[in-house]
Length: 320
Image (tube, rainbow, N blue to C red):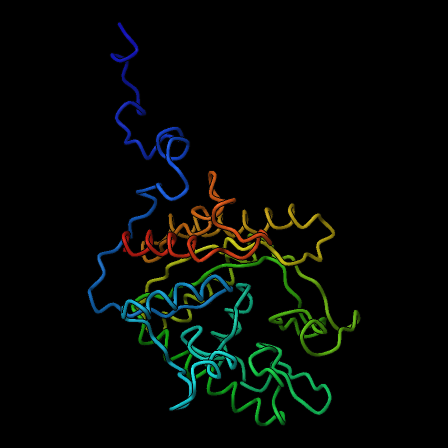
């Protein structure tokens, strides 16, 4: 008997199942077969896109290809493109700004379905300007009054609800496990008070590094709420390959980044195996796996180069 005659579960696997043939023997731009959607989607499928900063690339790619991207909160008519971008229009399907944590997504969904009143999440006042704690950078100079901020938030929340009500697929990019909350109300913030707006007070603001159970629970609750108005909604998860800018965990930022991404990736994988209406696209693996790192990241080792983004999007549309 020769080695070739021996049969085991690995002898009939395709080349993509082996590190040597799938990764080691191909260059960074030569990998194939990384993803195929588990669904057969119609040509007029509609996508709503949200999440951390890397999610913007999915929005842009869908829009450029004229593939059913929902823009539920477009800029006012005749707004110049540069000004619209400055004010964060058409970045995501509603003007949410980056949604880094599952806790933020759950709060937005509860606002959209009336479980939390629109004016309950905080506004921060600074130099007579008002900043929305859910998206402090959405207006570069803040709002002129709290009422103006509440009206803007109301418009965003209505657009957010409309986007997931009308969508066939809700794309959400998981970004961070770390976040900040109000010590009394447990309201999650989009970013730490005092970094872009507001004032940090250690008595009022607490650091959270959400664990596996908390993140999975928040995602499942948000998805269940969305399905109350759109029972057929599907969810496509990704994990952002962009490392943490900084960590408040006390760990080295490299260790903290690996922890965050590992937890998020594990949750996404478990959700996919437990629910046929959830899928996962491996943007994280494409950018960070194998020998891709040197080719795909800018010199700061955080920003993904345009060539890397294009390569990721190529895999996305080939597998869709």
